[in-house]
Length: 115
Image (cartoon, rainbow, N blue to C red; front, side, top):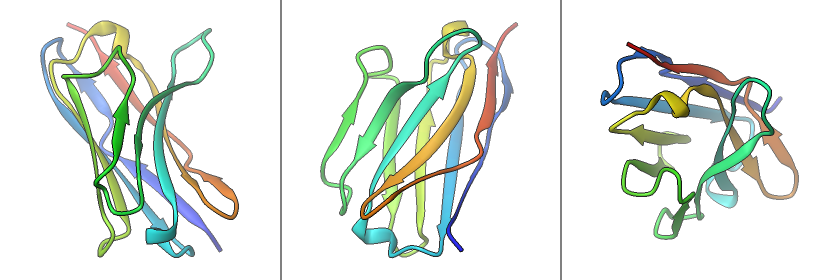
């Protein structure tokens, strides 16, 4: 059974930091591209970050570039999203996705940026 489990969300003040984790099981983790998406209330789900099989290739949305970093640890079957200098507009449910022979999604973790 494939599972992707996100953690690390919460309430943070503007300018603060959070690190999201997504732990995978049931897949050959290193054979999957990994993604972080987010969905704010009333908005479409948007792609935030992408990372390749080894972690050497990454891509970030313009809205988060310079503030967010995506990394992966294939030994731990985990992908991370380090979020710095958070803004209220970063408030959303954050989802990880593993894309390979099939796509798998996590259940999401809420990030709220508010004073």
